[in-house]
Length: 306
Image (tube, rainbow, N blue to C red; front, side, top):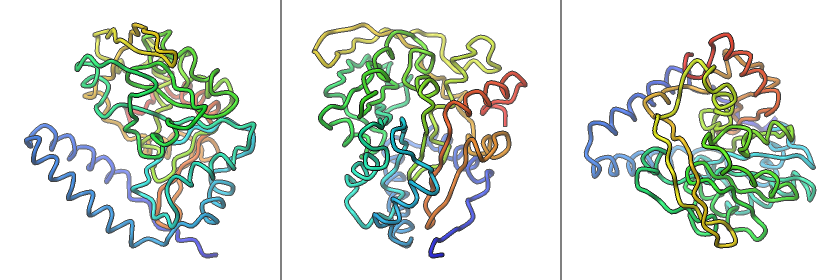
């Protein structure tokens, strides 16, 4: 077997990294933050280049065997090309993902703004589904620009989708101020029994976890949003203006470790972090994960309390 299986860093290292990042943001001037970010990026690139190259054959094998992607399914993809040592152009990943789900499958990608929701909405942005770029990784921006891509009309938590269910998944996101509730593409993943995968990222990037917050709302053990309800101008694919209302996450309450939560409170058959060739991946069954997390939340166990 030619796979490299190395130990995933302990959860405590994830928590420490999050805390250090938050301290840096609070203490250092913007210029120093950017300089530190550049240093960390160069360190990341050196580490990634030391890993075994990921060729197309290995990538297909990971999609099929480890992430268990099936033809015809709805597949939500989190990604970070920077954390992958690819021996092929990154845009071929989209070809391989579409190949994996087939013509009857639908791909979904997050297409978020650069800043966190609250800071972004404070800038009074105008969101245009056709022009507002995605800062959720270069693969997501490439997907957003594809012919036939549909994008949800949400100023902070939009997604884009490619495939026969793209319109159905994205059509009602702007109908509720709660960005992850039943009107959202994230909850539609439950409806369509979708699979969620991470490519180059761990479950710490799994946005779907917030569907539980919005499903339970006042009954959820933690209230994760700022009280302010934003009203934002959004422009749809036909060029029509809409005023969309939304809440924004309070980042002071976002100090959580999703990977730790999954390892401690969710069976591997529902959601699992995986490492292959020294690179991070994960897979999750959306419907089963949602119902399991609801049960956990009703017991007081959430991503915010582990």
